[in-house]
Structure formats: structure tokens, C-alpha cells
Image 1 (tube, one colour):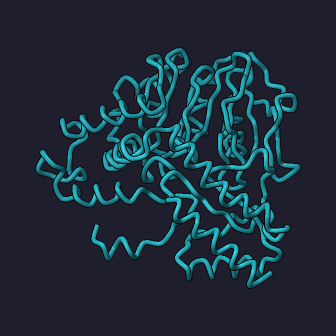
Image 2 (cartoon, rainbow, N blue to C red):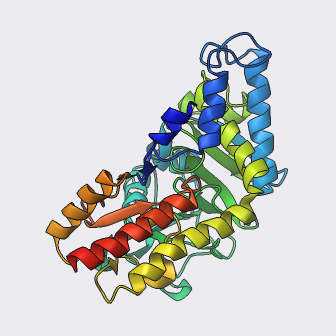
Length: 369
């Protein structure tokens, strides 16, 4: 990427599709016309060509290394985003099971997952945070999870409300299913209790168009042969993500992101520390603003990925977003269901961008307090 083009980049706080590492964009730009060693662009390459098969295998291996994925889990790359997984999970894991699935409804995305799951079988809403506009997560006692549930479903990070689970919950034996779409790869995972984890890439792992699903072998056996072909996890595992033409360019870009995490960042533990440090810059400022900035999420459940907060009036919030854009801080408007401001500070958001936002917030309060 030219120096001029890089200098024109703003700090992108959009909730997704979101900021990508500059090094990844520059590598993709260098390789776009002709992938080194193959004489053609990845955009032109057959999904069955050795060049792409090498990229596919490398992407899976990098995921196994970064997340320490055990051998009894399979990795597949699909399309359709989280909305397709809202249906695929219960279609494959709930049909024919004697117990209901437990769902934790902690925000907009998990609520949508509940609505889709109810079409496929018995669902028990173990916790519903609607009464407090999803500003916190349940305690273990509040959730009261069924250890014999067909599975226990949660969204690890709610982008709209800005609440996040900071570790894997204990389910007592029920397989844990995680929608990690908006915090995938932001920290290591403990697979002890995880049955399935999925993530659409456009928040933290790559561009829009590819969804990664990691599923334990024993849960694959629940997929029934009479399911529509694309909706059956077994078919995608059997065909190594080539059941249909996969999103080749998106998988290639995910590969570059994974290499960046491994080689440039130093792994997920280092990424987690970086994410905590970035989030603290904003939350400390919010807490020290004497109420001028009011966070939506309760402090114990705040997201490291999406910092949501309000200002004293909607007029000030509108001005905040406009002035921020003028300063090169893009995508700060909050979702309509929560309002206010949402700063999405995913893995690829550089600390310089967060510092610039924090400086702007201090100046804005001083000038408009």
C-alpha cells in the first residue's frame, strides 16, 4: 500500500465489517494480481487447485496452533454468517434429542438465535436479560443451567449492548455452544467444556463472507442423514469445507490475519493483554468523567471489543459522532436499540486509535460539558 494511501486511513470503530491489520491489507495488495509461485490471483484460483488447498490446510493448522484445538475437533469454513448458524446449530444438535437446549439470552444476537432455535425443537431460556436492556450477564445461580440439556448456547460477546463473557462457563456436562462471532481470537479458549464454537469472520478474523465452525467429533454424530445437504455439518467435514465452492478470498485473508496474530502479535495471550489494555483506556476515562460519559454495560461484564456509552443528551451524541468523523474517528454511532456511542476496538484496532479516541473524549467533555 502506498504511503499516501496509508496516510489517508481513518481509525475505523465500526462494529463490522471492521478494521483489518494494515500489514494484512498490504500483503493482500502485493499478492492480489499474482499469488507468489502460482501465476494468478487468489480471486481466479480454483478451490480445488493445489494453491488454494495449501492455503486451506495452512489456515486450519494456524487455528489449531493459536487456539490449541484438541485433535477430536473438526474445523470447517462455511458461508451464511451467524444467522445461518442460528439455524444449523439446532438443526444438527437439537433434532432428535430428548432434552431441551438451554439458551442464555444476553443481548440482541443471542435473542435472535433463540427465535431460530425454537423452530427446530425444545428450547429453554435459562436467562433473559431483557428487563435491564441486556446490560449484564447472569450469575451461575441466576442461569440455573440444566447439566443434561442437549446443549447450552451463549453469545460470548454482544456487540450491540457491549457485554461479554470473560471465560467459558461451567455447564455441568451439557456441551457448550458459543457464538464467538465478535470476539473470536481475542483470547485463548478452554475447550474442556466446548462442544461447538463458531464465528463469522468480519469482526475479528478476516473479511465478510466466511464463517468458521469448530465442532467436537461426538456432536457430529447428531447430524441426521435426512438433513438438506448444505445444512449438515457432516458433509462439510467429510468434504474438508469443499462441499460447495468455499469463499476462497475470504479464507486467504483469514490466513493472513492468523499469521499476523502468530508472528506479529505473538499469540492469543499477548493479544488478550493488548485488548485489555486498550479497553482500560476508555473505561477508565468513562468512570472518571463524573457521569458525563455513562457506560451501558455493568462494569463486571464490560466488553473488551465494543465499548458502549451515552452522553448527557442525544444532541451531544450526534455532535460527538460528527466531530469524531471530522477528526478521523469513524463508525462511532451506537445501535438504535441502545443509542449513544459504540466504539468497537477489535484485535486490529491499533492502540494509537484508542488513544486518539480517548483524547477526543476528554477534549469533547471539556468543550461541551
